[in-house]
Each structure stands twice: as C-alpha cells, then as structure tokens.
Image (cartoon, rainbow, N blue to C red; front, side, top):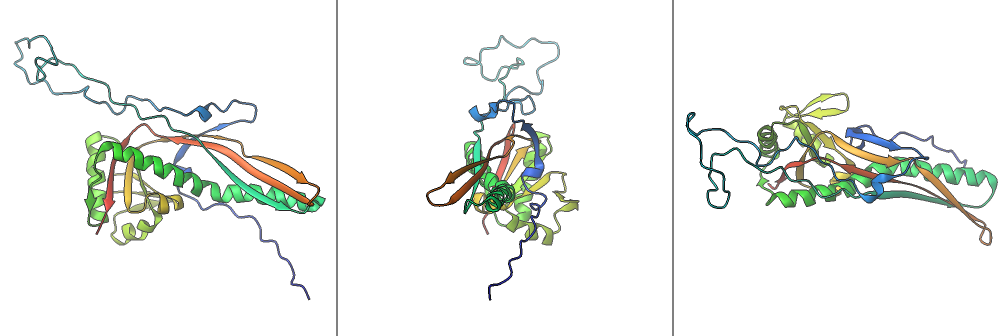
Length: 263
C-alpha cells in the first residue's frame, strides 16, 4: 500500500538576522524600481578631514592657507568624508514544477513563493557579506585577534572613535561563543554589545563572513520589489513551471571597522 501523504504547513522564516535590521523601502507593483540601477548612500555623519582643534595663539592670525607649501597650517580647512561605491541590487528567485493539472498548478505557485520566502534572507545576506568584505579591504589590512573578547574590544573602540552606534555583522557560529563569554545582552531577538551596538547574526554570514566581524553604520537601508510569481506551461511534457522572484538592494553610509578572529 502507498504511504499517506501529509502536507506540512508553511512556517515563517526565523526571526532576527539581516532582514530584521534593515529599514526597508518596499516598492509597489505600480512603482518604478529605481534601485535596480544601484544606490549610492550619502550622508554627513562620517566627516573626513573636516574637523580639528584650534591650538594657535588666540590673538594671532595664522598665515594664509596653502596646503602644498604649508600642510600644517592652523587655518580651519578640510575635506569631506568619502562616499562608498554604489550598492548593486540582486535578484533572488525560487523554482518549482509539477504536472499541468489544475490542483498541481496552485501547488506549484505556492511552493515557489514559499521557497523564496524561506531562503531569500539567507541568499541576500550571503551576497551582502561579499560587499562588506570589499569595503573592509578598502579600509586597509584587517587586524587579526585571538578571541571574541579582543575582536569586540577592537570594534567597540572603533565605534567610540567614530562617536556612533552601529551594527556588527557576524556568522551565527560565533553567537554561542559570545554568549559563553558573557559579552552580550538580549532584548527580544536583538543582541547588543556592552557599548550598545547591535549584533546581526545571519545564516548567510556563515559562509559569507566566516571568522570576520564587520562593523557598519546604522541604520541599514533597503529597497525591494513585491515578490512576483511567473509561470510557464509545457504542454508537450505536461509540465507546469513557476518562478518566484524579486530584486533587493541593501546599503549603508559607512563601514567603520573589521576584525578577524584567528586563534
């Protein structure tokens, strides 16, 4: 006798992770997806050589500023902080297929949509991690430390130097290690450092970041389309196919620091 078929109910993706930390702009079906050409995040929260301390005599006038002839001039002068390269979108998709009978068609569409819903956050986080590492490389050599205490100490100091609260992106494999070291506090699904920075643990970071922890500005900004399910019918082979997909783009104003845990 054939076994009885039981259809498991659809479940929700795990809470937390990258998607729950993003300030989303959801693009409606009747709106243009402007994020498809890339998004460049600009802001004034991370000044470059625009600030300083006046230490010239109060009653004197420093010489006229000439950055080539007198790079140490006391004149108040500087340059804006840099802007990161544009953030490029990714298209995530999920596929399903079965015979072309009417009940099967509805099942195919539902399965494709649910597969996208469950796996989209992890796939996007894996791609986002690659961008994090690129920007980390642009900062220079990523320092290596022996343990999570040293890693967190480095990131806390860098955030304090920038005078901002931010996000620390890390593989979920490090979560038990942080907890065992009693370095984090928890509120709901949110983990925070002693300095108040949020930890973002995502399944996509396991392969995407590995042993590297990356600190970025907060908030994270995201743009995404409404998921679309597109179908096709192959009558010759009695096959009904569905592909669920949408475009996603996530960005941030600045990458503050990165550190590698290398015991």
